[in-house]
Length: 158
Figure 1 (tube, rainbow, N blue to C red):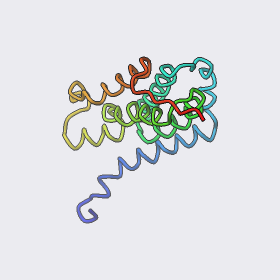
Figure 2 (cartoon, rainbow, N blue to C red):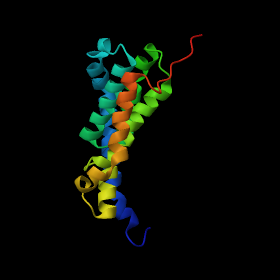
Figure 3 (cartoon, rainbow, N blue to C red):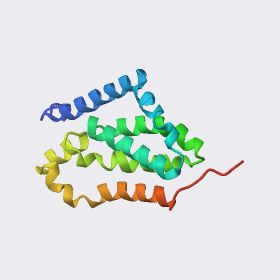
């Protein structure tokens, strides 16, 4: 790892992660994300709308910034109160941001996963995109299940 350039070859991936998490810290500390979400807060009245909004938030952060951990962290923190208000079990939020954040990350060419997979396989991201069924079907099924109510768990009333 040290004698054949292992650390040096991983530096680009490490730099992407550090820069993305720094940007996420700024967005959180400056209150930008809560301000953006306050505008749509009143429209999130059903589980389908909340799941769709959380998924689009995680997907957008993933595409704009290219960091899956940041999309999970920011979306989970931002939408937790909404899911609690709608009496939805936290596993619904977890599954939503997993399907829209982590699973989509290999399809973003400038993301950490996209860069790693592209470099490891020697194939551009857009070339393997049509064959990555799991990645985009997970997102579509999560949104569909959110609107139909299939697999959506509610908290037990106390």
